[in-house]
Length: 219
Ligand code: ADP
Ligand code: ZN
Image (cartoon, rainbow, N blue to C red):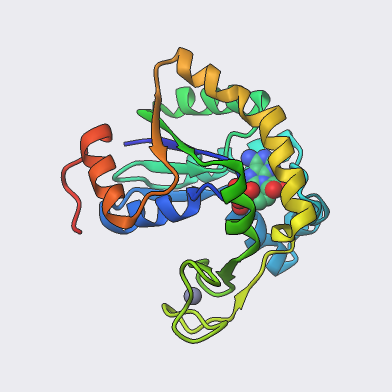
């Protein structure tokens, strides 16, 4: 099962992907997480992308496409993959088509998570991420047991620089301009399935089983 997960910043793409990875063993590939890991290491790639990300701007297509190509080419995906946060522009969508054709790994579905704009800002500005394992929390909606400490690995929870309000507004605007039009592109290919962004864990299992037709989860 090969999927794209789409939705505005804060829609819950990472949350959905992590539930699905744990229960259906589909490999989660997040370009945002890849970039953040490279920034943390201060690798050449990390240094190249850092200023775009902090400002809430997109990383240039060519750089992003190359990363995704190398991850998809080198990885092993016994139960398929979920791309989260990629593609975000028409250029990226076309590059992805080319990569997947070459590798003979066609897409099965594009999951579009739908959320009202008012909900997004509240969600994102309260979001905290584990610096150790990338688990996502929210200060009021889904807090960790001990403040600022990850329940899973004991790592320190941080607020992403681009989760501050000004960057968030820019990210939503860029989404509307550059990424939203891709939904039409995938609609024409008949790949879109929608998920209500207010989903809970149990809703994910129901969604996966009824809309995607996967029945071998271990929840
Ligand atoms: P969100 O979906 O919540 O905005 P992500 O973690 O997917 O967050 O992405 C964080 C940032 O990483 C983006 O704002 C952008 O700067 C960069 N980024 C991630 N994926 C891409 C992509 N496909 N193309 C360009 N930039 C990207
Ligand atoms: Zn952790």
